[in-house]
Image (cartoon, one colour):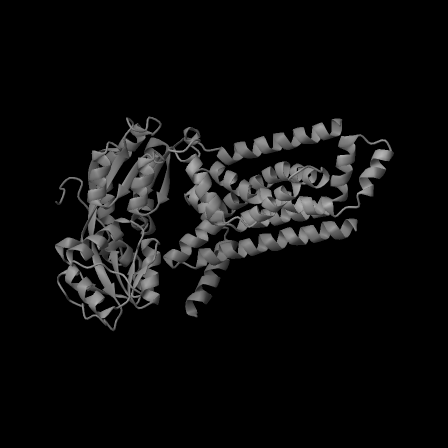
Length: 230
Length: 275
């Protein structure tokens, strides 16, 4: 029991002194997860909205695949991207393995199906008459499309929150593609894995608290936004 | 339509800026793949910063087992390796993947066990004999199971004892040295460990040293630069500068001076290789 209390007091000390290593680790997590979620937003939202909106053969199959990919194991993504990015792989000449960019690519692949899949659900849940009304009022296709997005904004925001939550908390992709390099690709989850294996609990607990705080913060902000405009 | 285009433009600019931020890295970087032991014991934190400062280069340390370190070096994903499995190192050089292997330092392995010593190995002189007794008693044994230098050594000892370990008592951890030690400690199992990691973890462990001093337990570390002929993109010159630094009198003194609670973790031998 003693080592847990020691770990907790050590954790608080690390947080309140804003220990340099601690800050660096948290920044890497925030930076990489934010960029990968942004990329997933830019690619996933239009993809999901189009999928919900357009009728074409095989559409249900695409949606099923998307929903399956939502639960893609992180280590499988790690393995696939690793084999592409290694110097032996087809994209090896880019020299991206063990960089933050590699982490971004892996996390993007993790977040994309979530953002796209949940966007489909958000847009599908809308009343189709919204679009008809917009068109009857003289909106062109693009404007009609944007009306859809505006009406579905909370569902889409929820999709982004879910995507961010997944990449911020994942460890497989970060470990395999980033390599857990201190001060460069070491993020919260890979640092916790390392610290636990060394039997050092203080830094691990401090980082775990940050993970919890960020998850809580994102959801509180989301709730506030929703309430304000409801 | 115009608004949409503007929005897309803003988004793209934002992403480009973010990507630039993510890659921003001042100065040159060098990638070193090494064993979990040299990293987790803090040795590299002691010996690398003077080199980084002098050469204005940032070393990215990727800490994995020796087997994996050699593998990613073969693929050209790192510039230099610091590892401990002589046979694998010699093969790496012979295959043309690495150049100029140099001795850096050594320590030794030891067999640790739980206080009760169910297999009765405490004080034995031969590690292979001790492993034989552990298997006879089917006493729990935790193996690294990850092709690390320690795992390769363990396999050679089983081969020497003419045994093929398998069964519920033989636990393959697939993790680094510290994690494996902790697992053995939790499971009251026997384990083979390098002395540096053991000294470093000692105050958190209940396991006791039982077999040590066997010449078979010698543990030498070598540094090898990845061949620029095999992989033209590697940073050969800074890698060779790091080899020069690790084998220099100044760095060798730092290695000798690195102690924890009175125990010396590594013994430098760049000048007087112990065969």
